[in-house]
Each structure stands twice: as structure tokens, then as C-alpha cells.
Amino acid sequence: MEIYISRSEQKRRIKQLEKLVEKMVRLPASLMKTLPCSKEVIDLAGNTPALKGGARKRQVKYITKVLKNDPADMDAVYAFMSERQGPALQETKEFHEIEYLRDTLLNEAIGQLKLARENHIEMEENWSSQVVAELGKQFPGIDSSLLTRLAWLFARTRNRKHSREIFRLLRAALEQKRFTGKQKTI
Image (cartoon, rainbow, N blue to C red; front, side, top):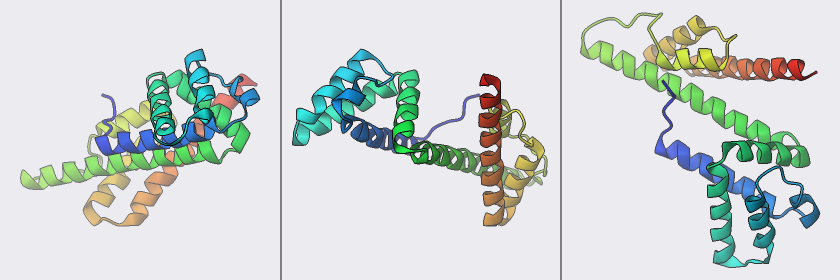
């Protein structure tokens, strides 16, 4: 099961990608030629600085669409721009991704609790979560039982400390995944 991405979340991700493309088209021509993406994107980005107003906005939206359809190019451009502008760009992208994963887990827990109450049964602390199973595949070292327990606690109490703890666990899992990836390349 793939984690569902709402239309609102898709729009936020597109806006984030548009901001990246805006920064990309402002690069000097010499740097633009070294972009790690398809020739089509490089040509489109190279033509954009000469455009004004609405034409420029349409061009940026078109480049965004082309990048969105090729995830490998999109990730390469994020990495390239992060090298040029510092790690803040990549960190912001990862922060939003972790927020989204946390919110997806919490929404599932709230939905399961509501369903359990409608059926007049008690939701177990170690309930079965599809989102946690997916997160376990994405981050092999993550403590799945702790995630389900924290989500259960949040659903019952709406205490934000549980939400923050889930965020912290997800961030640590992402950093661990990044760290083990770097070790393999060394």
C-alpha cells in the first residue's frame, strides 16, 4: 500500500517545486549548462530569463511540470541547487516530508479510533497501522511499536507532545537512513 497524497499536499509540493524552478532559472548561463537534468529542461530554463511577466510564469510552470514527471531529474536538481545554496533547501524539503508522514499517521490513528468508538469497541494500544507498516519499509530501523503507541496516545488525548515525539522519531530515522547511505558510498 502506498501512502495516499491528498490534493492539497500535491499542490503544496508543486508550489515548492515552482520555487525551486524560480531559483534555477535565475542561475547564470554557465551554471545552468551544468544542471544535472535533461537537455529539454536546460534549454527551457535557459530561455526563461529573456521572458517577462505572464510568459515567464507560464514557462516556470511548464518547467515544473516537466520536472514533476521525471522524479530522477527533480531529485538531481534539488541536490544541485542545495550544493549551490547550502543545505537549507534540502532540509526544508525533508522537513515538509516528515510533517506529511506524521500527519498521515495521526489522521489514520484518529480515523481508527473513531471507527472503534462507532463499533463500541476499544482501540488497542498496539493497533494495526498500514502507515506504520509503510514507514517500516521506508525506514528499516524505526521503532514501529513506539510509533503506533504514540499515534494511539495522540488520537485519544490530542496531546501535541505525542505528535512532536513522532516527528522526532521520523526525523531521526531519516537522518539514520542518510547516514547509512553515506557510509556505503565511502
